[in-house]
Amino acid sequence: SKVNKCTKLSFKGASSGLHHDYHDNLYCVLRGKKRFRLFSPGDAEKMSTRGKLVKVHANGRINYEGEVTTAYGADLQSDAAADASRAKDEAENRLLAAELAVKEGRDGAEEELEEAERMLEEAMDALIDIEMENDDRDEIDGDDEDDDDDEEKDVALFGGQNEGINIRTDSGDDDDHVNGDISPAENDNDDTENLCGRILVDKTVKNPDNFSLVPHHILDNEEEIRSKYPKLMEAKVSFCEIEAGEILYLPASWFHEVTSFGGHLAFNYWFHPPDAHDDFDNPYTTNFWSNDFKQRLVTLA
Image 1 (spheres, rainbow, N blue to C red):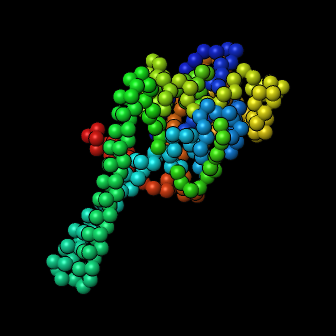
Image 2: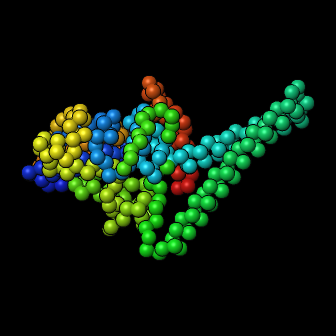
Image 3: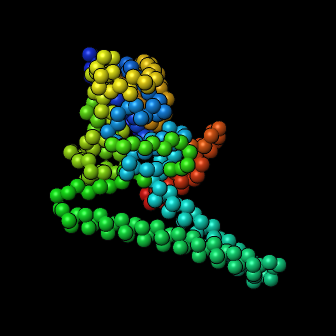
C-alpha cells in the first residue's frame, strides 16, 4: 500500500483528466470539494485508452499490452518466482522431516524421502528456469541497446488469471495530473529512465496507458463526444461530490475524471486490489503481498 497527499488552489475547477488507477483507493478530502465522474472497468473498451487493452480481471484490475499482471497486481514473473521459492522451502522442510523419519526407522519413511527429493528437484528446476528467463530477457534488452543507443528501452511496468475479460483489438495517477503524467510516487518503477517506450521528463512518465484520449474539456459536450468518441456514449456514467471530511472508496480500474474546487486538499491511501471473493479476513488468493512485505522488512532491518 502507499499514501499520497495532494493540495491545489482552484476556484473555477481543475480537472484530473479521464483515467483509472491500478490500486484500490480510499480518497479522503481534507479541504475543498471534489466532483467525480465515474465509469466502471466493465466499460474499459469504450474509454479510448492510450494503452492497448488486453484483459480486465474479475476484480476489475485492467491489463494493457506489455503490462500483464495477476488479478491482485503482481507481475507474472515475480508471481511465478514466489511460487517456486515457496515450493522449494516446503520441499526442503519435508525432506528434513523425511530424513529424520528414515533415521528413526518409521514405516513408509523411505517412500516419503523419495517423494520429498522429487518435490525439491522440481522446485529447483522451476527456479532455474525462471532465472534463465531473466538472463535471456536481460540479454535481449542489452542487444536492443547495442543496436541503437538512442532507441528507448522497453521495460515491463507490470508483469493473469483465467477469470475476467480478455480483450482483443485490431488496431492511461494522481487525480491532479491533467496531462496524464504520473509522478514517481505513483509508479513502482521510478528508478527507470524509460518505461515501456514512454519518456521520463523530470522523473514523470509521459502518456501513461491508463489515461483516456478523450479530452476532459469535451466530456460534457454530448455532440462532440458522439462525433469523435461514439463508444463513450454507450458507457454508463455516475457522478458524486465529496466534500471535506468525506471519503470515497474508489476500486482499482474505475475510470474517473475529478474536478476540484477551492483550495482543496486530499489524502489517498492506495492498496493492491483484493481478488478473493467474500473473504474479508483473507482478501488475496495467495500470500504474495504479505510475503513481499515481510521480505521488505527483512531487507530494511
